Image (cartoon, rainbow over all chains, first blue to last red; front, top):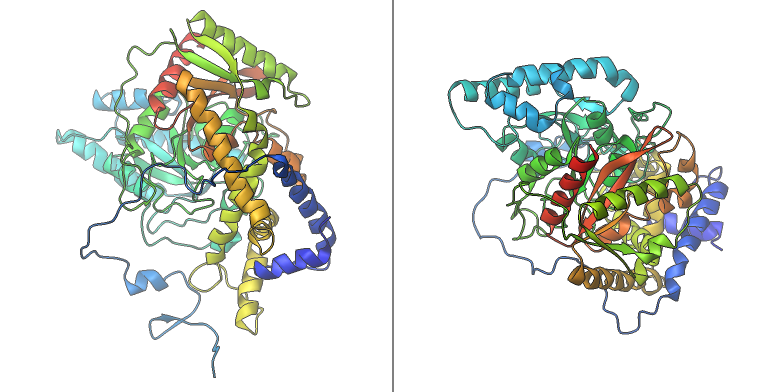
Length: 94
Length: 478
């Protein structure tokens, strides 16, 4: 059984906040989905390698060369606040 | 005759014969959209102006006697997680409500290079998470077959747009069935190619090891045509395959001698209310048999763990992927913060919907200290076992047949409230993504006036087998 404290702990790692109003129902549904996935514990996976990627080809290297990437204007177009051509956020060091 | 009710291949034939123009094809679809879109809500954004310009260019090319590409003049709907330069791309989330991509996805470039016309961006479940398109920030899309019923998801807008004749073809993304299930629910064809067949460059990743772009169409030939137009090796996608590409024609497609496997695990599994769907499946099997296919039951013992495996792996990847949405470089930024940490947390909390949050949380949990081996690593090992089951089956068989969904398309606001029931509806589709296979859903009949899809699954890079089988089946049942 997953507790409200555990849900708050996971939310904190995921940079999410579950409000006091939502926490009850959220924990209940979260517990349902997490107990649903528990059944894989019964599978015998002794000496089985994990599959991280499904394609059997090795990756490839790109040719080394000059390419045109995004311009500064294009990169900054979707942010809320900029200054001197940079993303502007809070001051985090004194 | 309405142009918008033709098949895509018929439109192209008539275009090349100069019976109709690309502008006429487009205006027929725009008129259709004008008429039905207020009820269906398949689109988040429609790019009328640029579509008209693109259609004019195709007509000029034809008038000048220039060669045109294989998608010439076809209006295409794109799921709104596929980047279109200068055209808003939202992932159906408040988070990206105003996001304007600075570049095109490779598939968008390929559609344009083949003279296809980008008509608009279709509705979807938020960040492609859901099976009904009800988690969209932009409202529900309705099923053109019955407006009280969901279109399926997550690519519900793309499926509905094709079913409602708003576009002849569209693209979706399929991480665990998000092309095949809405195709089944809307009564159209949905094709999920092999992992690595179509470039994922410029597609917002949900679960990188499972995601693949797929095509929607009103018949198998159109789905094939569309896949031909977008498949191929792309150096911009590190998981793109050198084997990618479609180099076969549909001529002489038949079912004679086709070796079909039926998983015993699916036969033994009973889902409440699926009796009539199963009868329809038996009818479809008898068609295959009558046409000379050989059908046998086989065991894929680890299929029964596919759902759990899928939900652990996919949510783990979701949680890492969506961590990029922090309110800084793009996306929604809260006004309620005093520290950097609050900026991240409140931006994400205010802009993500409930299902997105739940999946981020599941993935974070599965990857967290103390649980990683127990959940994530374990799931990756079970994934190996599922893949091995398929590899073994495809040594002796050409294709696997099953239902696409164990349940009929359902009314709004029903199972969306029960996440576990919603996840269980993905039973037949998720194992295909875990093993990177290709699969197609095509209509096989109706129950209670609602469409039911048949799923044909093939081994990796065996698109030829599933498409030809589907094409031959479709011809017989028509």
